[in-house]
Amino acid sequence: MKNPVVLIGLAFLLTGCNPEAESTDPTAKDAGAEQEETIDSLQNEVERLKQKVTDVEKTAEKAVDIMDEEQLHQLAEAQWHYQLQINEQSIEEVDDQSNISVDGDSLEVRLVETQCEYSPLPNEVHNQGKLDDFHEGIEVTPDSYEKSAPAGGTINSVIYRFDEEDFPSQPVEIHIDEPLQERLDLASGNITITGP
Image 1 (cartoon, rainbow, N blue to C red):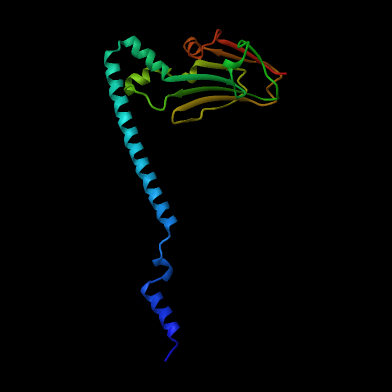
Image 2 (image 1 turned 60 degrees about the horizontal axis):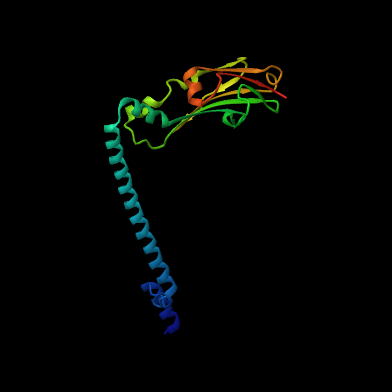
């Protein structure tokens, strides 16, 4: 007859029995219970947030219904933000916005349009706050720049890049039309950028 220890070990393996598996680890039970509590808590939070979104949507619908056209237009405009950046610095941070001097051999002028990720307004009202063809509200000279217009999601932009061959040897002039100038909150629609 074969070794009885080998036969018993083989029996455990074939039946899937594991003597260690039968002993329960209290820390494993605690960890499982804690995970279930976390899952329940997260599910409750998701339901609470869904209800909050529903409540906000209902309130927004009621607010829109009682607003007049001018109020709706103002609210729609507040959903869209425009920013002009010179070498990644917002023009809002510049003291003299009409005459800007920058350091470096290159220049990047970026006009950015950002809309709220979530608008309580109906789409047709929300889109009334947008500047039509915002990128046409800016004119940059000289025209020796490389132009790109990345877009996606809630952010659109137009970028004018001047390399060291074209800047700082000559100043760059920016003209901004009145609607864009108002949305950018600029005192002047004319900006001159010079190098060091």
